[in-house]
Length: 189
Image: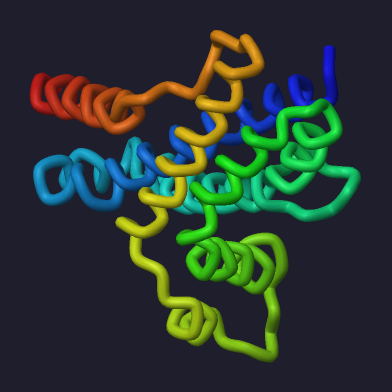
């Protein structure tokens, strides 16, 4: 297996995680409210939903950060581009760079938020200020995730990898279906 192939396999895993965790967080914090708020606030489940909201939020940031990590030891986008060039796939590396170039300021914001509030708790800067300074909206986060997943999937297909990142809202649909089931069960009791 080539280096580019191995790195792409890791990126598929992280892209899948970023997309799934983002969709679950989005469904719980936005799509489920107000319809399922009473169910999520039910004493039997409320702690689960508090932990899930925070956990999925942190996990999509961590997965995105791993994708954009520039450390030479890490299977990130920068190492994928190097491996592709080394393997004679310069055009593929250039396509990746062109596709992600417009997102660079937003990617820097994601990494700054991850570094100052998700992976580390920087006490010199209040958390709210970190978000204000790095202002990025959920729609922009979704855009970054979708674009990078498209880039990873395109590269995977070029390398002959067929098991790629899902291209749907199935994380959101699954979360809402679970909440609907909980709500129905709660109404019966």
